Length: 274
Image (tube, rainbow, N blue to C red; front, side, top):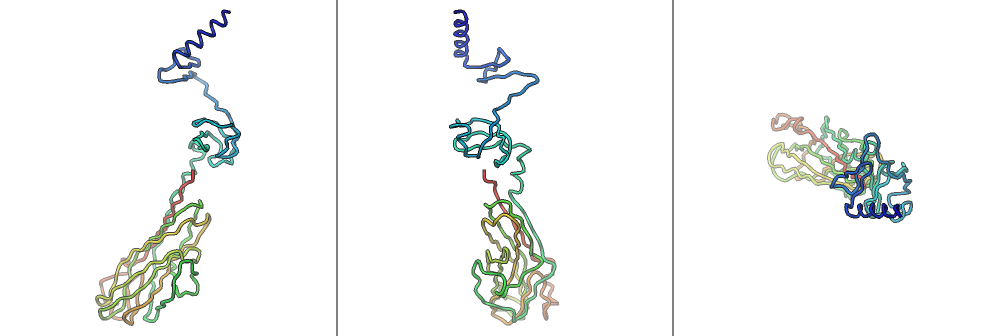
């Protein structure tokens, strides 16, 4: 009978305070459970989760439930996971922090050899996306070729190409129409037009073009920047990525090789899919 009375009083006290103190008679007022220890910790249940959507190993888990997962095959590896309501999310530690690495990758190159086109180097052939590099009269800027690494299947790649063109014209009037092609693994993924107005002798113009492609496969890829001159209003040549030294342009001091250099930047955004 006394045991029942003590049990009743204990339950009544818990009901009044709505708090539990373990190894302490004075739980902090802000806590529902207060555990006191100087040399011990709390060990959470060790569970071998089958996957992030596993709701049977721990049957019908309650949202916010925490376990220590022992299955290293899960995306976050071994460690603490909590149930969000429809999947297990892991807590970041130094053991899985590598998952946040390389969310963005950056590559860049610039040219040291300019690309010189004569007055006959024009080809107004079709340039459909997905066409191969070979056999379509493209000239690759070899100095800008680079190999990039993609780590995750969901990604977006941004290409930026800058530089200058200079024509060898000796009179004003008209323009030169050109295109810059961006190739991944020798397949055209984006193309941008460039127009060089022939407004004065040895006309030049700066340019910046952007291109994008999505969801490159994980692994290594070759990126190439190529040029094609389509048409010209005059019978003149054009130089990309450096000073045009043809004829009287050689004595023209409006431009030098350094300021006319071409550069290419590849930025890969590959967010981690939690």
